[in-house]
Length: 303
Image (tube, rainbow, N blue to C red; front, side):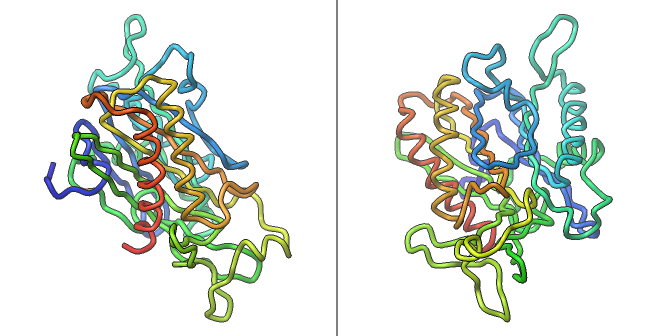
């Protein structure tokens, strides 16, 4: 791990790997934490495609995840999680259950079937490949992995702009690290979180279009979008606190995407806490989580 790493892999014990099909314009991205990380999730979009999210709710038996899969291919792409499970089982990683260890691998998808080849989707082999590619080097961003076919800014008669994968982190002098990786495939445009200025998004006749205004004027194709990601920290948090961090992190999505959390998005954020740092409150982590999510979204389209 490099000292200059400003991405999710700045957190010790977390690696990230992409598998990319540039021809079909799809792929998947895996976040590995084989030692286990306390995990939570919050789903705000109305059209999600997910796996194992219920296992992460507060009060459940399983409290840690061993990987998170972010993938293209809509619901078909969830098949790639099987490859991640297979990889981790071969490493003897998972929740102890009698004679076996069961890897806990929650996942979420984006809809990228309208670009590239809709008949080619991430599968078990691609999920396994992403694990093999995982490293603690700075996360590769842009049109890679799950963000290969991502687009932003969509409405009838509007040309979307490329989306992609973004990642960033923040460090405090106390040793606390909070980081995010986000796959941006939003219905809305990406905006400056401070000023609201549109950074990139849908265009018509070469001019940027305010997607929020268009939503008031026309029906939007349902379920063809979604922004998904992972917020991670080295803080020590309970399952309830990690789920709260996932909730607070969505504020960053709302700051950087206009509009967000629509009926046409399946916006989902996972949260992971590795527990190597003590003494930081859930408030601190949650506030920073929103900041890094917003910054990661911007980095996805400005890389």
